[in-house]
Length: 236
Image (cartoon, rainbow, N blue to C red):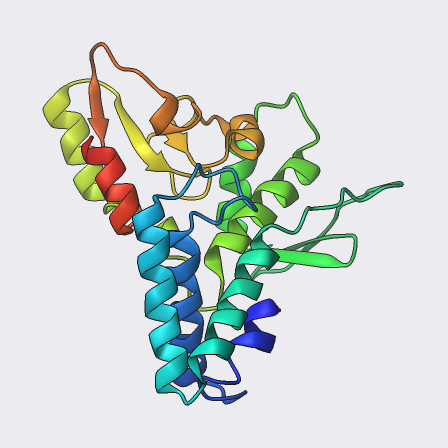
């Protein structure tokens, strides 16, 4: 909403289609550089990466005709939006689930998340059974929906082809741990993958964040999000 109000109009207004998706990819790049911090618990962003992202967005705003002072103001407002404290919903919170052949829709507090039936059943298989499944699924999906940013987003759910992963597993002769996965795209299965959000992913078998893990032995498949700062952190 903040982007639609502060940035998108300058970069081309409310036109739809590929132009709109391109504008929102600018936001996606900016958010990843800032690690969605502190809105999401992905860790502190590298100052140089955040500064570079600010500069790139400023240039896009200036090229679109906005004077530098106003451009800086709008980028600053985006940063303030990221720091807006989330207010927990109070009262009787219920998740409703609607099924069809094409999708499953989970609704809670006026918000909805959608996924394919096959993925819904995958989540059911992964779920530990220690918490309410529908509520856990809604929370996890809502969290990852923030990362998606726009309808054509979702590159954070990319993974190696299953055939490649199985080939690595055969080569290793043992289970392979995924360093960067999610309950939605894990190929290794429960207890064998790391993910971004332990608070909502652990009920679906996540081992927690890769950056907080230590390994003595074993085989780990590493396919991080295609963000320069994240890749740099992995290399260290």
